[in-house]
Image 1: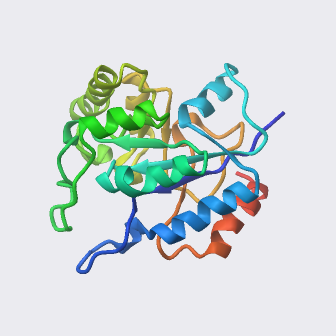
Image 2: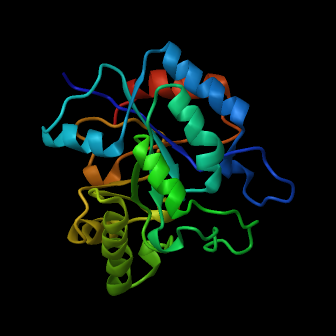
Length: 239
């Protein structure tokens, strides 16, 4: 059986604080609950990104209606709000974290309100509950704006950092800001990754390049109708 697999990309599930510069990074908790409830009603089964890669390698099977739920950056609100809702609905998720900023804040955007990132205790607890963690480089660096040596350190170093912490393979990178090019994809492969994820409003086909796996960005402006359309109809849009 061939699968057309959507992946959803979130940052923060929380109420939007005043003075925020990037409200598009938020989804309100009630909105998030409605979205996961719609996944349940449609009988979707969540899979991790590494499970999807295993399927693409021929090393594993997928459930009938697979979907990937992902989060970038690893905000503390993932632990406090989002991932408990994910688990409550019987789903799992993949969280992409910058390994050198664990326990820090979103310092890569110093003009934005600083919010805490997951610390080691929260990561370990979530991992015990079946949440997967993958790489978002070491420092959330824009990989196409740095030289090869720096990019390789960000990529390879993050894999080593996280594998030491998690005791599990780290095979996937989310390119920070979804900025990537042919050089960055090759460097990710050189650093030992098996795939990379981007933001693009399409689903993943068996022919989708593994270093350009698509994720549909979800924000507080995503209506429920749009959310359902993305899940149900984009799979027919083709590459």
